[in-house]
Image 1: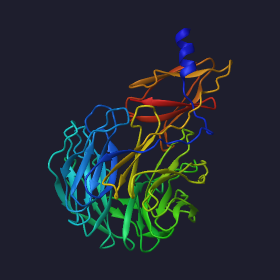
Image 2: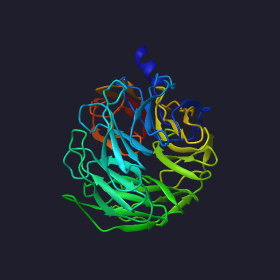
Image 3: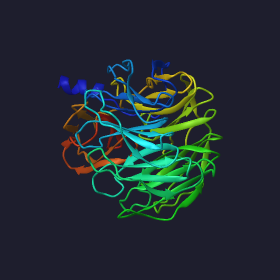
Image 4: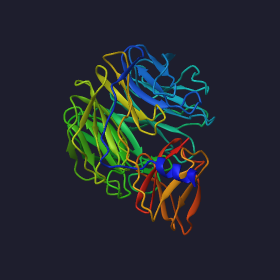
Length: 441
């Protein structure tokens, strides 16, 4: 009984009114003109590390996480010429995080295969087109292997490089898009189970939607208006209708949100203010209310704008947090193991990285005497138990993007759920109109 009471008293739940808070930035060195940043566990210790593409020194800096929200000094790995975008995925299916770097000057993508120790092999370069600007990964041809999509700013094309599953990629398949394509997002926009693409076109103030027809075929472009000079795009469900929406950051006027119809079409853009000269945006749930928020890196004002999601496709007034000089890119993960999403930026003007730890309050659940709910263990690895004093009913688990990853019904008062295939992250368990935070290790 004492153990149960302890679990009840320590169970964390969502509090929509919790104050949004990020601590003062901690600074770390990278190399010259850090332009893009991503996060993954590069040495297999369960902690999220950082990788930064350095545009002027043609390399990637890797900073390993101590687990307390602090990072080691950089270890640098050579890439191509003019690295401008970096992402991480397992490209050769060995269970270790690799890197893909889009190179603006050598017009190619560098693949650095991870050893699982925080180190990487020599870069293998695969041609794209001219002036690569951004890279994203997904399985575009449904063969179970990671592919790449690369925007080419100089030739107005999107290059798709199909992966061989070993860390190698084929010749580019080019698709004409709008003028000066900058960023690309991959998602299923029309609900047919195939991964489509959305590209921001800086000179056209537009977004090009490319529907995947399967078997390596793609439909004609459909263009939607964004704000002035769009540079970065993300896709998730912002209004809870199960359809993929878009959020775009515009260098001239903050953020544009376009709600999806589920058919590959989108409504008119709704605008929300951010800081000055915004470059990049990401989405996550920063205040733990199960609604997807946005964070924007503002290059001129030297800060991050956080816009809290309302769950309707609308967002709060931006709250700004200072970073290092001239941030160009932003990423998010739980860097110190407190189950909150922290922030990290690559700062062009400071040749380094800023890390801002999330200090937002998270309220304790208001458990009634009649219906008490808790999760055990939490954090969990392979299985988690839901225990109540009444019939559990419907259980829904959401990931950090607000997407449903598991759902079941139970007439029992205790139910064990297999989460072994969940990625290490923060999830929200919803049951009996209560929301409880679950940490998957």
